[in-house]
Structure formats: C-alpha cells, structure tokens
Length: 557
Image 1 (spheres, rainbow, N blue to C red):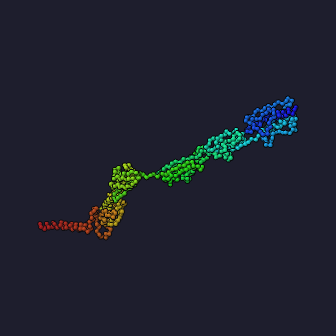
Image 2: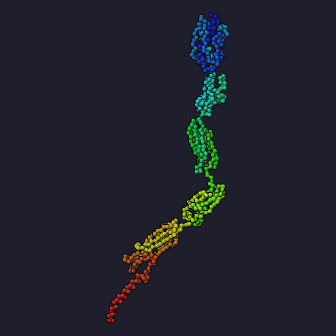
C-alpha cells in the first residue's frame, strides 16, 4: 500500500472517531454559546475528507458515517470516548501540524492499524480543542418577592441570552408591578443588555434595592368641632392592609409634636382626639401634620373659633328697691345694624313704655313693680315683639308690718296664776318677741311670734300671795298692755295666815277681784272690820226695843 493510501486511511479513521465523539461533546456543551464557532488551532480536514465544519447558527448535523476503507485494509474499531468530559483547552495548545519530513515519513509509513490507533488517541485532544471556555456574566435575576426583588447570580453568557433576555421590564421600585432582570451588554447576542446602564448601580450593590414594605400608612384630619366652647380635632391614622410591618405615627401642631401613636398593625387604625392642645389657640389658624417614617402623610390647616359671637342684643335685668317702691331695671345693648324696640310684660300684661335702642348703643329702662309688692310674678322682655328673656320675681320693698295684740287675765286660784295672750296680726313674714314683766321686772321672754300667729302663757303668782302686783307686756321697748291684780288665794278656814301676819292679827277673808277692778282697801269704811260692829250695835238696839215695849203698855192701862 502506498504511503498516500496509508495517510488517507488514517484521515478516514480520524474522521470516524471525531464523528462518534461529537454527540457526547455537544451534549456536554449544549449551553456553550461558543459551540459551532470557528476554533483557533483546529486543523482543517484534508482534501477529500467527508466531514464539514459545523455552522455556528444551526444545530449540529447528525454524524456522518466514515468512508469505507479498502477491503484489504479494514479499519480497526475506534475506542469509546471517555465518559469524563475533556479538560478545556489552554492557550498553549496548538493544532497538530508538523513540517518534519521524518515525521511525515513515519506517518506515511504507518500501517492502517497504527494509523487508526493514532487517530483514536488524538480524538480526545481534538475534542478538547473544540470545547472553548464559556464566558461568565453576573446579572440581577428578578424574583416574585416585593421584599426581595432581585437575586445576584453568575451564569454563562449563552444562558443569560437564552434564559434571561426575556425577563423584560423596568427596574424594581415600589410602584412597579412587573420588573425585569438587570444584565450588562453581551456581544454578540444581547449588545444592549437589559436595564442597562441605569441598572449598573444596582448590580454593583449586589442587586440590593429598597424593598417594597407595602402600601404607605395614611391618615385623615377632621375639621375643628366645638362642644360647649371647647375645640377638638379628630386624627385617624391607618396602616395599609397589605403592609408588611406595623406603622408608627407622630402628630404635630405647627411643627411641634403633640402626640404619638405606635405600632398600628397592618390593616389597623386608631383615632386620636386633640382637645387640650387646642385650648389656647382660640381665634388662631395653625397647621396639623401627621408623619410616619419621617414622611408627611397628612396635613390640614384649621382655625379654632369656638367662642360664640356676641348676641345681636345683650340684656341685663335686675330687681331693686327705690325706698319702699319695687323697681325693675333693664340694660339693653344693641350689637346689630338696625334699631330695636324693647317692651316688658308682667304676667302677660304690658307694663311701662317701650325702649328704643340704636345700632351699637346701650340704653337703660325701668319698670315700676310696686303694684306687685309681696307677689310672685313673671316679667317677660321682648325685642321687636320676640321674647328674649323671662324672669320670675317677688317684689318685697316694704318692710313687713308687725301688729301686736296682748291681753292679761285675772288671778285664778288655786294655785294663784294669771294667763297672758300674745298675738301678731301683722304681715305673714313679720315677727315679734314679747317680754313679760311683774312690777317692772322681766320674768319671761316669749319665742318669736310671726304674722298671723298667737300664743298664751300661764304665769305662776304663788310667790305674790296677798300682794297686789302689776303684770306688764312689752315688745321692742314699747308697753303693749298691763294689769294690776291682787293675789289672795288662801282662805281663813285653813288656819293659815298670810305671809308677814303677826299673832293675834285678824285674818282677812279672801276676796275674788274681777278682772280690771281695783281691789278694796283694808281700811275702807265699807270693809269687813267696820261692818261687823255696826251689825252688833244694831242687833243690841233691836233687843232693847223688844224688851221694853210691853212694860209701857202695862203701866198705861
């Protein structure tokens, strides 16, 4: 066999081995974008070879069968390709070529079997020359998490082009729903990259971006409300339903914090009523702010105006006494723009003259209420015919009149006593206190006796037995009545002598003295001591006359 035939057989064997090894290599480098491209150092096939270079833009063709060798020189079976992937070629590796004539003679003089073995030994090295190293690229791969929108990964350029170039969309931000990957330019295939160059800072930061914490908290501020002159504002703070963390709030009035609300849970809300903080801001305009996370989320400018304006007409009324005359005084201030007319009624009956008050003026009028002394009446004031005020009054300018009435009864036995009557026939609210005196000395003071009342007091006169005394009644230093009585309630039959009587003195017979009558004197000619001798003398004379009468008739006969 000629050297040329040996060389041809060796080339055919080499092509067969390379063809058999192509599927394994293609499977190993399926994701390698450099596969199918021209590789430096790969020897071009010899003329007449049945193999063709792979098209970098198409899938690898099925392996071609090796050309049949001459019958006299059958090729030996090719050894199987090792399962371990060949190591990537290095820059020092070069195509197998030689210009040495002796080496060429060695190849030309080799037997077919030796050529096949040489070709089989050279096949792994040829495969390593085909598998060029895959360039890698670092990208920010999007996720479905708004709190962790990117993962930083390192992939081959082919994988970045084929597996990630479809992940389009803007760079993530809280207001973006669908975001895309961040890939630097890859040439060829993705010359502009994705989200580049605007995403370069994110990639340089390890694909870290501000996460989406969910909807921002919000707040609302009511207008000022007034309750009995007190101002208040209601602030409502809320955390979003889809928030990922509780929210804290600060409420400020004109930039000064006045209250904080902490840890409002997602979906929760709280109300805060500002009242005491507004107490000193009457008739002032100020700004209320609500902040969360350092951001102003609500603001409102409000004005406190809770003190009511003055009424159109101000009225002041009082009841006074001018001496003993009851008089109502009314002061009227007109805050309106038109004159007003004030009239008055007592129990629905008009009294006094109308009072006209001009705009911005103040006038004073009087009403005579003396006809209603000691009566309870309703005084009604009307402005332009409309009732504006009503007062219930009881005029009482005349002092209560006291009208005392007294009486002293005679002596009553036994025991010796007298009864006095004390009465006040004056006004119902009048009062009087009486004093009882015997012979000018106060022996008793009565309780107050009010108008329309009366009382009786029984005085014991035992200590004044056989005495004549004067009972006197006084009030406010004035003698209201008196009576002189004789006390003689001990009879002679009792064998008792009046106090101070000596032994042998004649005991007087008690005499009942009529009320108001003066007691008889013990030395009077009509008294008991003068009457008894006269009676005895008359009785003796009568006896003499009776005894001497018959003798004279006998002498004369």
